[in-house]
Image (cartoon, rainbow, N blue to C red; front, side, top):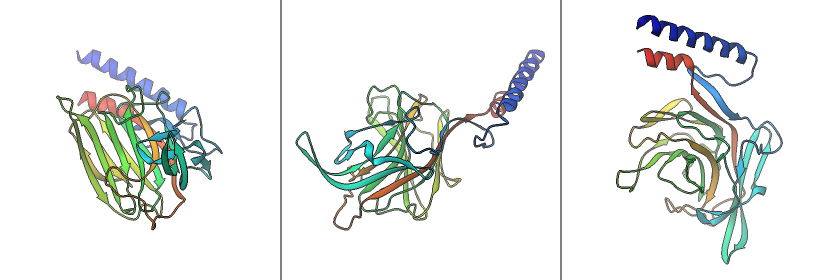
Length: 270
């Protein structure tokens, strides 16, 4: 039995060594115990349509219209612009426009490390987010399986919300979340991370562990969403005459990792 196990581990070690040789000439970001599987560094001059979709129209709050013209890539960042502008759509008066990008049907993953470096907008009633939704749903909508990596609602630019949404055995919506109060997240770039494993999700901000959820943790692939909503039907904070527009949500990069082979070998041989 031990001989078979040793042969198995030896073969896996050789495979891992070959993978290292193949990857040694790349410029991919490296993190101990993790292997990069998907990323966008936003180094071009337009959004990469092989990695992202742009949602257009009304979604969520009726206070903003999502438009492709509010999405741009400049100076190494994805920029989501939110501005005050009047529209009428299907008889509905709308007073703001914003941007929404996602990876549905392009990239999704169950488990791993999801990392985003971003600088957030700041005015009253602004709601930037980084979140994951279940790929299995036909439409982009709130589902029983949602992981909110980062949400902030202006003007409280020092408070980050982190939430795992799920359904109980009766199908009722449940959530398990926490908040982190730190610096003004609109003044500089910060790194927002989840490490999602079997039965646990850990949230990190600038490498600091901020919240852990072990309740209702999903095990199905989820896709990535980056957006800014204007007007908050969650906390009830709306833009008013003190709000300043346009606002800009800057994303430096998005990186997704899986546990590397060495870490997996250690876990199965413990």
